[in-house]
Length: 189
Image (cartoon, rainbow, N blue to C red; front, top):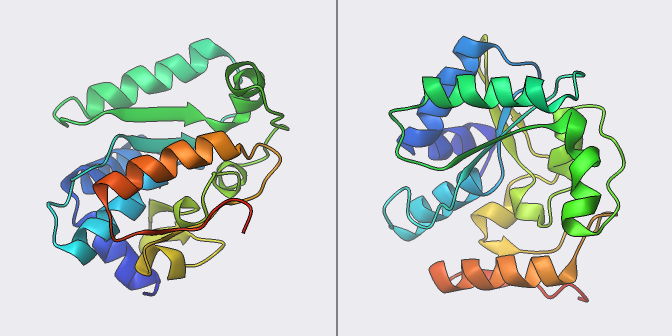
């Protein structure tokens, strides 16, 4: 799987395609569709399942130096209004403010980020370290570890400062139930 194949596979999901259009129209700073909604859409294509099967939510990252909750809430409301026709759970987070709430919520360190791709780099699994966004000539893709784990349906831990073996195990177990074809690599391997 290459970049072109990945974008085409993810945009077969009409929710991803609609979100991409909304991000383009809103021109949010450093905005990306990220993580499981992309990987799971590809898995569904590979396994012949309905394209939105098992997708729990659609994550959008953006980066705005205004770390106030009021600013983030305004973006959440505006994007949700634009996507009101989407029958999906959409999670929008300003990556500039994650360090303010993550340690309290998860009990793990989370140093401040400098851009949205820093947040992608900190995902629990390698296969979800991906993002797409509309660009002038199609779509930008951020995939620092490539697409092999996605195409191979492999789930492996991404060891970062905020890695949690318990959270990884819970996520992998949920995915294994939905996509029994995946191969889960234990966090200690």
